Image (cartoon, rainbow, N blue to C red; front, side, top):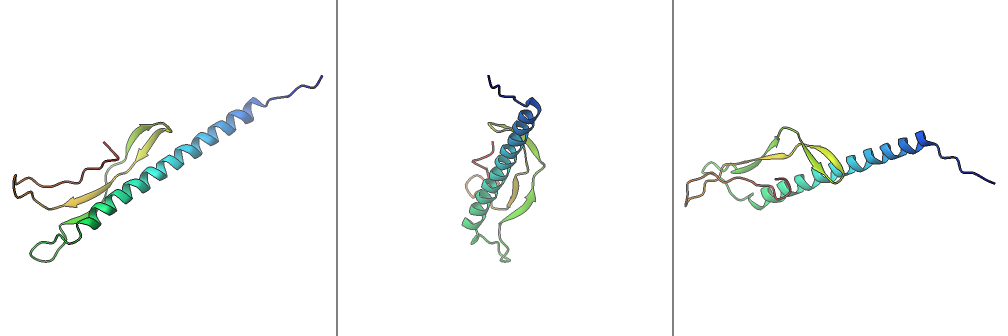
Length: 103
């Protein structure tokens, strides 16, 4: 009778490398989605300028990295930051960018 030999070490290595690929793919997709969201927000407000002609809404680097728990496992994310200098005329409060992707 023939028997199939299963190499437990090779199976575990393949599983861990597949998990790493999925995690890295999820991290990249999330980063791209965040960049696209911020890019769309800023480009929609490109005509908002102050009295000196400076744009009121610009990119401002990235926030500190933080860990999120996802279906693909925990991911380290560095969300892009936005410097929004506009003020709501009705309330006097500074307007802010709020991501619909990240809580």
